Length: 120
Length: 120
DNA sequence: ATTACATTTCGCCATATGACCAAATATAGG
DNA sequence: CCTATATTTGGTCATATGGCGAAATGTAAT
Image 1: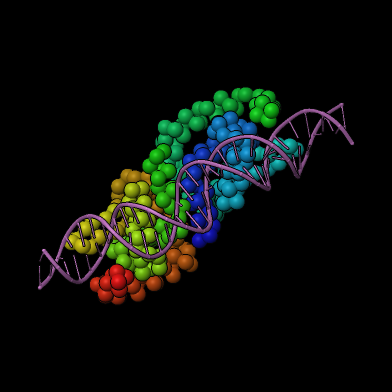
Image 2: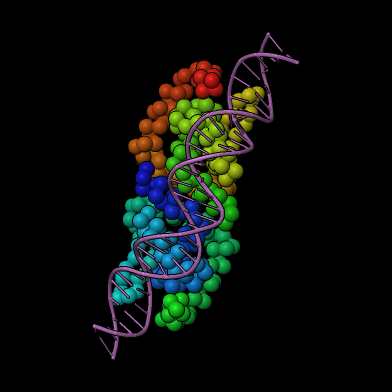
């Protein structure tokens, strides 16, 4: 029950749902998510920590870079089952598809410059 | 997104998840839920209001009695799709099956006496 | 009308939560 | 080592949330 509740609580915030939608099927760095959401970097980092702790996202490091992606769909995992349902619902959602478009633009930006700009 | 978020937020509380599980496939009155959860009546009533507003439960009145049940599974409703996933996960959950057993006992109690006792 | 009863609403309180800024940390490059 | 960079952590603050008791409300019975 603890695991299920952690996942449900993690999904009780809209920004975290947006994050989860953004990292579905691809991996992103924090600064790209910061650009999408328009929140402070520290806030995004904390949201990611919650999603990670709830097993909704996974991450890997590459030097200074940390990439987040949706947790592997093959892992038999309560959190993932809920996330799959939410993703299915978001696939038909206007705001989610706006986010998708915006993310396509962000992916075209130079990531180094994007991150540097945020860290000034 | 507003509807989806309302449902997700409603499910971010363990007592509300327990309520939803309890009213799956049957209808219950407030006092039966009060007995199950061991919370104040007013608290249970507020939780039910949240679940109702989020379209996760439906209710009907019969005189002084109000009965709550899980929203109709046939209604094409985002909230219901999430709830269905959660219910499926709860079906294999220890605490949820303990609640089910306890509810079987509560259903055997005289509802009039149960409610009266709570209202003293 | 009065009393009884089931539930909802209101108000209070302690705690949790999400947002921000600043500092700390981890890694890379010279 | 120092500087640069990406991210995380800590602390603060305003607001939200879940719990409770008491009062209000809605319905029934006499």
